[in-house]
Image (cartoon, rainbow, N blue to C red; front, side):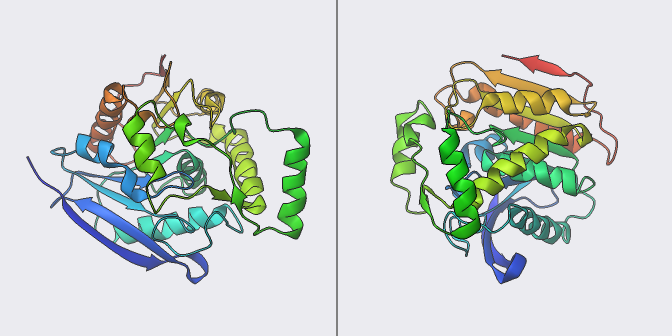
Length: 296
């Protein structure tokens, strides 16, 4: 079994912001997986899928989005949601310098799913496949109308004012060890500015409105008991996507971080199998079985 060589480094993102990244690479990989993490977390929380891929000859790359983890930028704030997308573009271009002819799969979780979706819509030729985990397209819960209106006003006049999201870490997973690790992680934060909130919401609307433009192979999965992000956003995106090869998995009883749940084996297995199939696909032409498969 081939083992990973773990490395980290930085590059300069949009506007001069320093962006931290890390990778787990093999010599002469048959494929690449790029991970875009969720809001408030960082690239170091994806050991489960990385371990699942060990021995598959797939190199894994992940960055800390600006304002997150070890990257520069104000915690919980961004001027434009597209800043995340442009940083990701620079990162993927950097990866491509040494891996020009290898298929690349983009996996985005939560806010990272929203970033990955927007990336696929903006740079449709860059990736051979897209995986969306609990994609942040529609916020969970019922925020009152006045609160949303206030966020729009603050976004205009005090855009960088950061406040706690008020979200509960207990809604991430049924696994208490996962929740405790999250709560004790010094690289995790729960801050969000009015500008980031409005940009986040608007990006979700844009992704859903343009979902029919998605044509690359698409894997979407979401926990039905997710209280942080509404699983119906994932369902809507899947239904509208024009991808000939696509799968949707809505997991009853699972919370927001399905890959970190107590019952995560089925999620990790499906994800790893999808990555493996994407690796064997010819560029611009997939060998994945046309399925339109849905599961619950």
